View 1: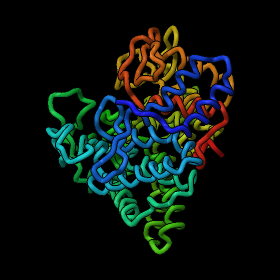
View 2: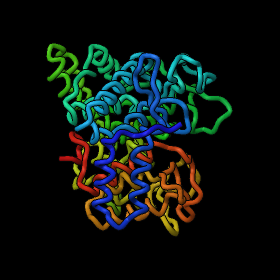
View 3: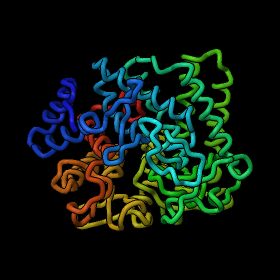
View 4: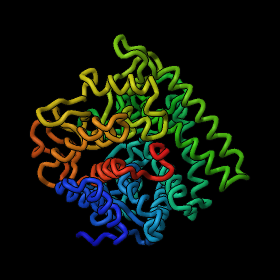
Length: 434
């Protein structure tokens, strides 16, 4: 069931129409994609907190819910009800993290829905318990951005402070995953990417300073345990914690000290273990490493990705290593870069071969340096909707009528954020707004 979107959305719908006066399909697509999260995925818990489903899956991912709601920070600057809604989403995410910091997706109530047969320490509130670094980073990002965008600070509670300590503790434990972690995950009778080998512990790793992740933001298992883009995101949110701690929890010096130490250890680990000199591109980042010398050179469409490093705030778009990495991952050197007759961009092992992801195209547009590249990507996104006026998960690069996930709100939200950036509209406090 859909509901009406607030009148405050019209300002931004009109902004796109004014910026692109002749493009009626874009007007239609933007309105539908921009409003999709609000009109179709927003529910409420028994406590009255906003619960944001992904679309076609009736659970809330910490990552997806943040990304889906993020474009509404622009609305929230002038709409108090929207600002309060986002603040309350952070409160619910905080409760989820305190319930289980290793879970990536949650049920609206303790109803036992989801993957309850997985071999891991599940509760009935958890939909899925695939441990992913980014699941703990995204709520911190949203908490920071809603503060910077709206000056709302009601989410900086004692519970939130406890959650920050819990997050740091998990990240520290997973710096020495083999020795310290009790996390295990196995799913029976599924493809390899849906389970962890080595009795649920994952591939062996050696210490690097980075923090281990069982799964990627695609919910696919990591090949090697140190997922570099997610560790980049970790570095960024540790900076956010230091700023939040100094402002709202100044007496908690341990919070600030631990976040700074962790930030520096992970950043050093990225520098020492995640870089490689490519014979053609020069110094580039690997996607995953294991600390013993094995490195995986690719990029995946889901965010955090290497392509998204400036979007996340890890580096500037002009950074030489980023630009070299960008050239590599937007070429056939990346096994998941797809070139079709209509679309070209980054796909994912999560979807069929020859499928480009609109999320990756939106990120490519947001981080592109030239107008030519940005508008070429816009044209591809408009052409890749499969005549539905919506974005999808993966799209056949030669036949956009073939796609996965008819209702995938994260992709719609990323498209909306990219289009708004072409109107020179950015979320306040986000790296690209500077």
